[in-house]
Length: 165
Image (cartoon, rainbow, N blue to C red; front, side, top):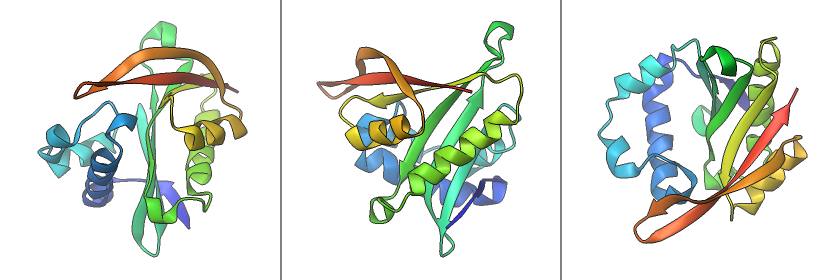
């Protein structure tokens, strides 16, 4: 398994995996499949060039099978924080520590930035596997956001977690 930061050449692979994630697990993401399927691949390529964000991918036999994104906040009073977003591992490769490796790489990268003191994330409250992974890596829950997402007529609560360096 190769874990590395994605670049503009990975944009098509990323979009394919992102759409899979949004289609199969809409409750896990703030974005939605219908809106994102129309997004040009070039937007992802541009995003991969940002200095405030980085997306890491897990490659298995040349195929992108997992991703996670980190975003460092810009406002002066929030520069000490980063957010972890858009975590996804394709189902056929789960239970092989891919998610763990992705989050560890994201944390290692953030740890190299001395200004970053903590990392925040949100996870749908019913996703026990993801919450267990985050806890095992040192994240702690600090709140529940009720009805954080609405899909159709169904609301989904999110658990807010943080990690301190």
